[in-house]
Length: 256
Ligand SMILES: Nc1ncnc2c1ncn2[C@@H]1O[C@H](COP(=O)(O)OP(=O)(O)OP(=O)(O)O)[C@@H](O)[C@H]1O
Ligand SMILES: [Mg+2]
Image (cartoon, rainbow, N blue to C red; front, side, top):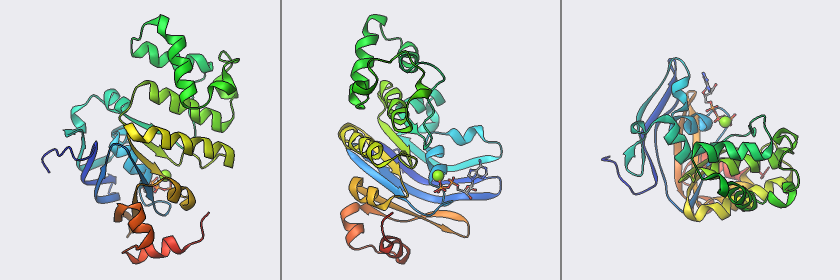
């Protein structure tokens, strides 16, 4: 492919190896602006590894190599400085990872890096916390440690930090796996609100969540210990008439 711009992210024949062992092979996937792509599949089929490869985080792991190409707006992602790529393509992990600072300072760190005028910081902080629906819960304790927040609040703070970088793409790796139903609903509402202006790739084991959120569904399946994308397309089509036997079996399971 010659740097197509059909999707914000175009993944072209991407494979990743840890040493001699392939994690996934020949993966093609397009992430469009305004669309939530939900990636599902059994444990160990390479979902987190894919998110790592998109953001080139695998480069920090010894003996790990990727083949194939990821395009961001038509540009090979290797042409970006790693920190620039990771600001434009934000990865939200399962375990929220706020910095060991106050809530306010977690956000100010980003505003400082972005060289935003200091007088605008209070307004930017209020806006982004309102955006992730955390403001009402924390506005009177911005100087308390972020680590004192609940898991769901920490996850929303981490999304707020990522949003301050104005990412074009959000990669969410089981963002609600350790959250209760209320906190999960907060994050799901937020994902839908963020989707219109971004490309979103969500990994989840929760098929009820996949059904609620997916515009596009992608199924990954391990073959001889290596993940393959066996089916991908509009969620409505795949949920109604899955083509692949494994997809049919997966969808026939009761929702978690
Ligand atoms: N740092 C690493 N070094 C070596 N092998 C790894 C590393 N990280 C993952 N793997 C292997 O790569 C394969 C895919 O792992 P990955 O974490 O991407 O799966 P996953 O689909 O995200 O699983 P889960 O649903 O449990 O999160 C697994 O066999 C795993 O053991
Ligand atoms: Mg994973």
